[in-house]
Amino acid sequence: MTTIVSTADHRSPGDEPDRSTRAGLSIAVLCFGGLSAALTQTLIIPLQGDLPILLDTTSANASWVVTATLLGGAVAMPIAGSLGDLFGKQRVLLASTLILLLGSIVSALSDSLVPMLAGRTLQGLSMGFIPVGISLLRDITPPARLGTAIAAMSGTLGVGGAIGLPLAAYVASRFDWHVLFWLSGALAALTAIAVVVVVPHVPSTKGGRLDVVGAVGLAVGLVATLVGITKGGDWGWDTARPWLSILVGVGVLLAWGRYELRHPAPLADLRVTARRPVLLTNLAAIAIGFGMMAQAIVVPQLLQLPEAIGYGLGQTLLAAGLWMAPGGLVMMAFAPVSSRLMTAFGPRVTLAIGATVLGLGYLVGVVFMDAAWQLLIVSAISSAGVGIGYAAMPALIMASVPLADAGAAVGFNALMRSVGTTTAAAVMAGVLAASTIDFGGIPLPSEGAFRACFLIGAGAAFLGVVLTLLIPKQVTVEA
Image (cartoon, rainbow, N blue to C red; front, side, top):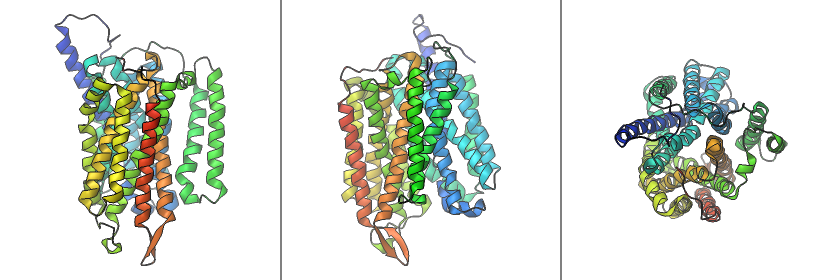
């Protein structure tokens, strides 16, 4: 395991090529690990309809297999970021990867609901890898490559999810469904080895102990709130159950915030989070995360609806995944574009550009949804916006917080994106369920409902533009 103390160490010119090579390898490992973790978010979606039979449970219970991973990721990202600041980011990266490995093995060996939920929750907890990896980049990457590295690492969040759907659909259609989790485990094992061998350990300068009460309070508050949001459609928004869950969650989070403000070494420094650049970036993250998720909900459904209804495109699940897969590649392709934009205009303008492109993609979708290739274009435009914007957000955050708090701050920003995507999933499901047509006794979303979802997604993206432009202009990227 390699240990470095600071990226500001004095080196002779002859050391620079070697340092650049080591940084390049580390960036590649971090991106691979982020991709492996992000794959878990969509890994089970092709099996969703079959899960009640495969796990011998009800449809309502089976839906928790997806929800558990989302909740695990939401909880892990801010806590993992804080742990990285305290104990060293490389160690937390390794721990996250080992958690992914364990969760994959548990899931691969599961044939019933309870162990599957345990495995999927563990897989979700591995999502802490991504914000910790992003914050580590500022420690180990030469300034000239920092923007591109952040963009590439940020893009893995969307790329992994986009690639995961067709990959999982293909594997599930050709092999036993457990192979999906053995594949995830293999990726985790490779990542763990690479993290140990390649990624340097940067000793923490912050010190202190983990705020255990703060971690538990944040976890309870987030889970209660997000469960209410994600399960509201299943439970019924006209019942007390989802609202009670949300109210309990918000109440716990308010109490958690008061506790954190009084704690001498809080899990998250809310005073730093309340700074205008950080606060507005996090609010923009919610809006842009909402906008990103809208296409992930709407486009696959449009592609798979039967052609007989007049606006469905009759694609299989695998075909729908393949039509959407280029979107993930577009996100990755726009990483260097985002880096150049940040160099030329700064992360604030770059984030505004990304959110604008995302919104324009949705506006194109309102009038351009009559063929699979048209939805491919819509997905590509929206994905380009996500690729540009997601790279700029952590750059804005890291430029506005002390180096010792970078991990926690980036983790909190990732959480805000997760809140946006989770809320979008609930809102889109509600809109699609509110306006339906009868197709042989089966209610299907109307064409107008899909157009409404595109408009809502555009509105969220343009709200992100407004919030971004309110961020002070003097914020710049710091190496």
